[in-house]
Length: 262
Ligand SMILES: Nc1ncnc2c1ncn2[C@@H]1O[C@H](COP(=O)(O)OP(=O)(O)OP(=O)(O)O)[C@@H](O)[C@H]1O
Ligand SMILES: [Mg+2]
Image (cartoon, rainbow, N blue to C red; front, side, top):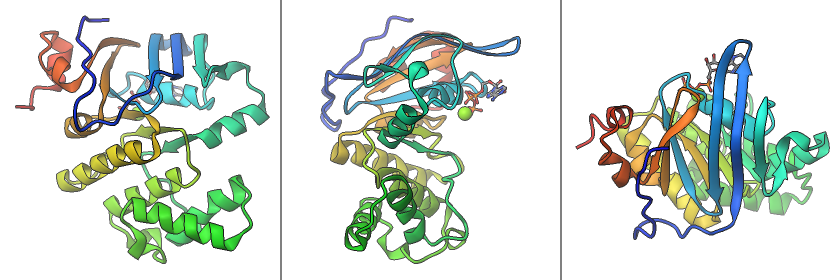
């Protein structure tokens, strides 16, 4: 790992805890002869936003799929809240996935359901809530948090790309996850909407004290949301630091990510 200074305590950032919620050591994952993750080491602390950058196909999505147990690593250790994910039973994995929100690139809303119905779904199916008053309140609170209350009765097809991201984010936070994994949350959005979503990621971290891994190619999103950043290349992390710290790096691969940033 390159030597980069990690600065903490910047004014606009949420306070990061000391408790490690995700601990990855020596993680390996291959598909046939293709060694995608070679030696991934990563710790995420409570209330910390960690941004992962990396060229296309370097294994960023594979890493977060390992974290939620959707892919099985070939080697190394991957602990969430202190427990090894590979050793979890199906029941334990189900419990874990309630604590980990996963924002897919597409937003993954059900097209035939209104925004309200999309948000009720995890409450009734996953948390098994029955009290309609409580369900209504949680749906409205989540939509208010993402600034989308006025679209509660709309269908996803009637929403703009940015609104769909907000709805997906509301559905992620409605079950109060302790960790949120964002896979390219701003891809496909215009710069202004991307900025709004990045601000929202930061405000969700502050409001709910969530820990997050944010995979992105959007340097503005990284600048806004990251407490710490890591750069993945060829199956390992090659650099780590704050946005400002990495911006000053003389490493060629790191510099390439900042080439359009003033
Ligand atoms: N289920 C799978 N089976 C076989 N190969 C896979 C599978 N999932 C990912 N890969 C391969 O692993 C490599 C890394 O994929 P991954 O999706 O993690 O890339 P990424 O860093 O997220 O890229 P992008 O920025 O384009 O999203 C790719 O070569 C991909 O083809
Ligand atoms: Mg990906």
